[in-house]
Length: 159
Ligand code: ZN
Image (cartoon, rainbow, N blue to C red; front, side):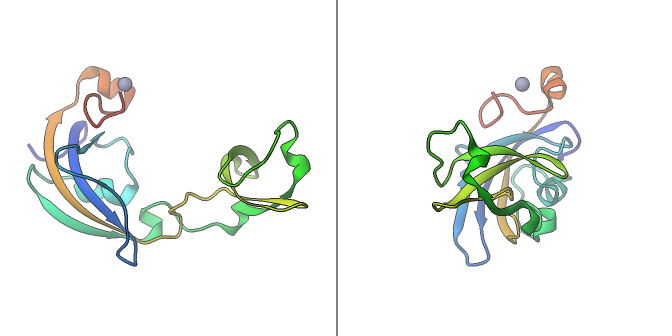
């Protein structure tokens, strides 16, 4: 049964960046499971998995547009400490919700100095071209619950 809308797919993968550095991986013993056709994965990855079958192995290169998006400089910048009223100590790595012209975004603190806090609302992999080596481990039809929840259940799934 090839992968189609509402297939629950388990796959192993290795994700590397342009320098060949491994960013993330899952092996065939502990594959990642997702519900196909519900935008659960980044767009280019879901597209590449459609129609594949169990045992298929393939590699894909995804430009930022098909992965985590291009880096948007408007989402990063320095803000005064007064923007963090009520927070005891603002530290690098902390995440906050902030209002942007397009709505609320989660930002990560990337730098703190006495005058400013620098935040970045881009995904950590924004602007990166990503390389995936993928192996399809299993495919099954989704249950009613899974389609209702719009995600895969069981090992490797949402819960
Ligand atoms: Zn659920």
